[in-house]
Image (cartoon, rainbow, N blue to C red; front, top):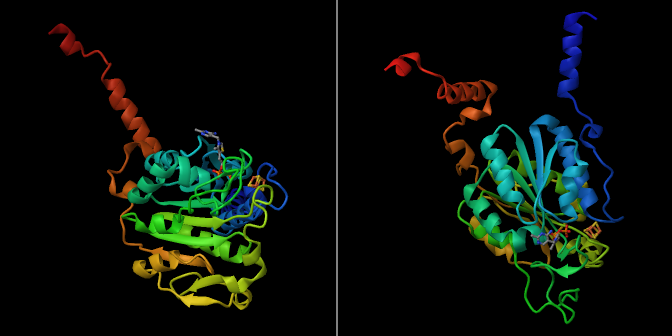
Length: 324
Ligand SMILES: Cc1ncc(C[n+]2csc(CCOP(=O)(O)OP(=O)(O)O)c2C)c(N)n1
Ligand code: SF4
């Protein structure tokens, strides 16, 4: 084959991806689990943004949702419960050129991983963080989580939970350096895709809480809101989320919310019925930790060679020194 034709073909293949290029193992989540819908949204984002699989990495903790990296044909790290964020930060600081995604459950993020969550917001490293919030521990079969609704009967709370749930959006907004905070619901796929897209394009730590159904252990959790779109509050703004006319027609309860208004974002975060969805807050001006640090010599192949040369030079025998 003519060399320039094969070069063109290679370029075409490199630059165009199909959904299949991002699909790996068949998901083992339950039928009706909301995680399926999030996976589809993310695979579409990867295709639409033409993300090279070899330049993309998914990091997770432990949980049903944390099986996510197995289902993406990219790099992945299925790590320790609650520790997805420090692993992702390690990846990003060493390889700022990679697209880093983090998948956590509500137990992963708001329970065992809380300290990492708070500090990761402060560091504002450029990554897209999806917290798949089903309000329960799914993988370990039905224990209450910090986002479980008040009074929930579970294996660990046979008399019902006695604590009000934590508000992950309000917590994130309250930490210094919060730079992108959004909420979506997996049963509105168009909105979810658009919000994940916006989070991905944002330069900084994009925290997206995805309300997610767990039909196995917390069936009915969101049924009232799914049946009645008037009980969802769509945050719209020219700088916020842009939904299709079809979605806007179904979700007619809307508020014009400027995502640069952090004070109003905090007020909206306090509303739990109707459930607000959209971009709460965005500040593109905040510096990202990995880019403000010294450029890392070990990122490029040349840098690695130079580093090894310098290190090996330390062990060379200096004849002048030997005779002295
Ligand atoms: C250090 C540690 N503590 C506890 C566990 C047990 N464990 C595994 S997953 C999980 C909770 C999963 O719930 P969540 O993070 O909400 O994810 P989901 O399964 O609902 O997607 C727990 C407690 C563990 N694997 N490691
Ligand atoms: S237990 Fe719940 S969260 Fe886990 S796969 Fe099944 S439906 Fe999804």
